[in-house]
Length: 144
Image (tube, rainbow, N blue to C red; front, side, top):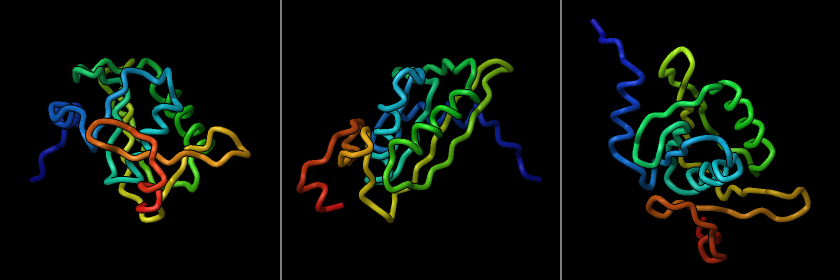
């Protein structure tokens, strides 16, 4: 008989690894553009997971309206990312009122991806170096 997986327990296990090349925590969604840059960086490097509602120290705070925040995040991804990349967004419920948004991004085969802030300007490509999201240099962009 297969044991039922507790999503909160699994989330706590992931968080104990701490931020790194494939894991980023965001306390809230106050800067959705920064979150999209992180996702672009994951797609352009080795992939990764963004957890929203988690403090830098790993404490699970949760978001009160996680489903509404997911809608805003999806909107921002479609607005700022070119070309689109694969990703999966879900919510892990901490309680009836709070949840953690998880965004899984695999390493993309269609690199490079760009964060386009303005419709008529070329965007910036980002990569992940250790636990940092960094704009690429021309040389790094050529390697992608």
